[in-house]
Each structure stands twice: as C-alpha cells, then as structure tokens.
Amino acid sequence: MVGLVLVSHSPKIAEGTAELVRQMAGEEVELVAVGGDADGGFGTDPERIEAAVRGLAADDVLVFMDLGSAVLSAETVLEMLPSERRERVRLVDAPFVEGAFAAGVIASTGDADADECVEAAMEARTESKLHDET
Image (cartoon, rainbow, N blue to C red; front, side, top):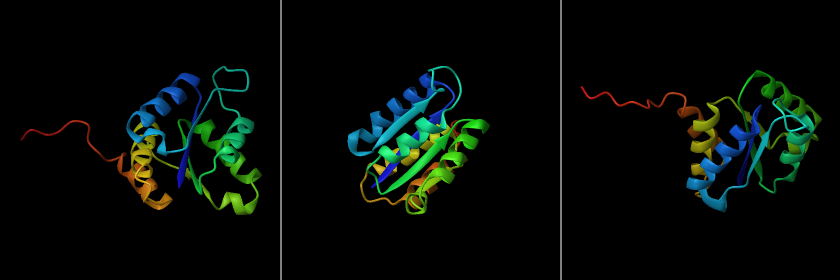
C-alpha cells in the first residue's frame, strides 16, 4: 500500500489538496496533509512532517512538496529517519496538486506500487489542461 504526505507552506492548500485527492481516491489511500509551521502560520515544520511519515501504516510513502523550503524540510526529515524507513519514503518532484491527485488515484486501486504512483505524478507535469481543437 502507498501513502501520501502533502507538505505545503499553507495549511489551506495542504488540506484542500488532500480533500481533492480523497474525493477521487476515497478512503483507500492513507493521506496526511501537513500545512504551515508549528504555530499554524505559513511555513513548514520538519517535526510535523516526520510525525506524518512515521504515522502512516503504508508500506511506501510518497511526499509531495509545494515550494523550495518545503523540499528542504522534507529532505531534513528523510535524513532523520532510520535507514529501513528511509528506503520506503520518496520525495516526489511533481506538480503539487496534479501530481498528488494522479498518484492518489493510482494508489487507490490497491494494485499499484510506489513506482507506478510516482510515474503517474510525473506525467501530470506534461498533461495539457487545454485540448487543441485543430
């Protein structure tokens, strides 16, 4: 089973993205939104990210980050994890909303592994939102 951690500088963006993913993926996917700093303001909090990663029962965890310092915080968390857990956690370089959505939907099938979920997230980067009518 693949779980997702959504790290955003904004609590509302993290929660809103999690809500969107849950609408299509359902409750089959373990998903945690980690938005804002420790005081609920804008920023990121490595301790809350670590708690989210450790709290998931999923075999593999995909971490989606919105902006640069969220990546730094997630990288810090990765270094803090024991090696056996670290091997099961991947930071995903994909669009935050679209990537998390695509990975969550694929994960909800129950048959997909982490690689397939990451591939779906990465494809979100190149999917056109507008369709050429020519």
